[in-house]
Image (cartoon, rainbow, N blue to C red):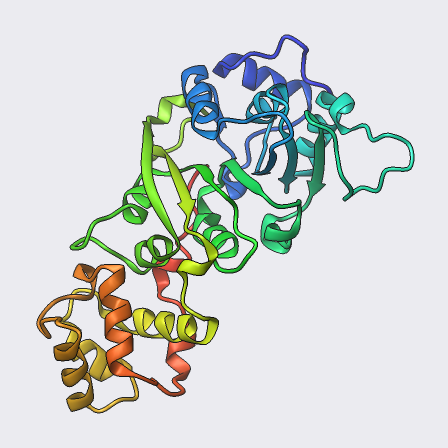
Length: 318
């Protein structure tokens, strides 16, 4: 199952490696393998791996990014869902996977080592797989981008930095300015700063996806910059309610979507300094927080427990 030692980052080599391993790219798992060495180096430059740095990698694939992280001395924990690719990784990184006698699987590890977890990343306690502080560096399967971001940012211990390859449309949505915001934008920007570091064309992958990609850098704020958990839950109930009708006027949307009288919503909007005719997509994170403070307790609302459809986008390509 071992890929050739001379495995290179180009389409022919990727196809040959997969064929020799008895594998093929699986569309159902959003498997599109990076073949552009300049993009790989750009990701590693953004990640700045260093000896002893704890790094979580989701979807390592054939291990080219993994190799760069390990070569820099990072201590990598990689989660791979595909058993065939996991077997390739175990062969390719057998030396990095080796543990000193008596060392526990989850215990302290040396720089330049790898812990490989075979399974679905959505089934893993991602924020607790490796010691703090840790970073995340990944070429994410696109169809799980939103749920993965919710897992990594929604509760501590959060990573210090995330360097992620995602679908370009999703990257632009995450980094959007007021006027083009979505629930996902508000969620991520509440937790972190966001920057699009690099746009990546389909030709950088084998097989080439049907969409453009982008590398985003997400740097979470300090833990004490957040609301307390009950208030944060109320914030997401408010934002989710509003984004069910993102292009409608905020006063009308909240009147329909929240179990509150229209006059209370109108008064809260006035107190928060928000024009009732504005659309939800125009409100910045700070305005949502001010509006929540002005509204006060929202009460129980079964609808508020359901995320908008865009939180779980349809499967795309990796």
